[in-house]
Length: 261
Image (cartoon, helix red, strand yellow):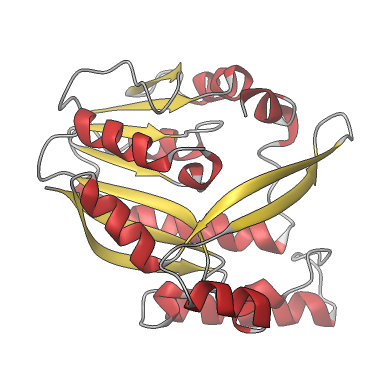
């Protein structure tokens, strides 16, 4: 996984024209601001990438520490953290180099749990390094979404079990080479149970890409053609409804806030 993200480090932050990433990162930004009271004391950014959210939280917390498995992404994050109240390290989320109860809260935007082979082990380690009572704000790839509802095969699979499945993600790295990753999707029941087994209690959820999932990926969101206008309408619906049931559980991905018990 580290080598995959190393190979896309140079273009990792190029997200400003693609509808998928506009919705994704605007949701993260709004969610971060909605949870200002959580960013106090010492905060962990799990799977920090190039440090976009690490830097934002550094403006609010006493200190923030980002951790990521990719050395090249961490080097970019270190640039963002210059003169900020924070630091970033290269590390495996299953074996974090921190003492017990080191952090008051944690965030993990970008669906790192879906990229990791053993998310249960990561949550157990996250529980270890967080103090009781702190909140973890985690985003994951979500099994229940418009594509699941319109695909008989995926619908039956999701409806017949408490578990999610695997979703293929295809993209091109900085060298123009095609890459495919298999990402873990979670149903709400599965994720709630997994968090509970590892010392967390789910408190709320936010859907991401509830309606914008149907927008063509090739759309230039900065344009003024019918596709760009349609995307902006769908984006507005997402922003208004993402926290309301059942839309908060129907995104292509989802943010879950969980309290460390």
